[in-house]
Image (cartoon, rainbow, N blue to C red; front, side):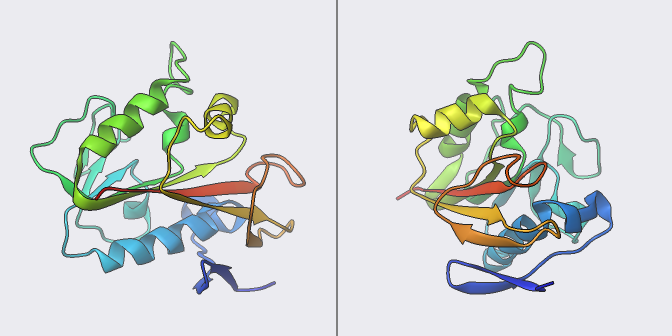
Length: 192
């Protein structure tokens, strides 16, 4: 099994951690890509949507997560989150696909409101990086196909083996050829 994968010409080590059994899912590639970006922005204002990175690393940035109770986590709905500052970097690791989808009542378009609100929270020159597993939320997939979510840049990674190896591709699907996330989009929204 390869211990590294390539993304945008850079080589990353797969991320293996007991929490969430990362060797079995997309966290194996999401965490190293996003963590490298966070490290480059360490001295800036950073917001994480969904409490993910603190399970693996000590973090020193703002985290908003509607449901997960933990020290330093702001328990608010991302759609209504209105902090007093703007962020140079906003990240979300496989979280936004749950907004409106895993809620009662279900509101598949709520993700658009979440992204719209997050865009307002970007400082001039700021950027947002969102990872989304393709196929988990069929309505989100439809919004992506219809261009309703406007990424400045977007990239796809595809799971290519049963032992959770991934490669960068032009597109990917959920559930094919292996169970669960086989496709991941990494979308960038950059503010001028």
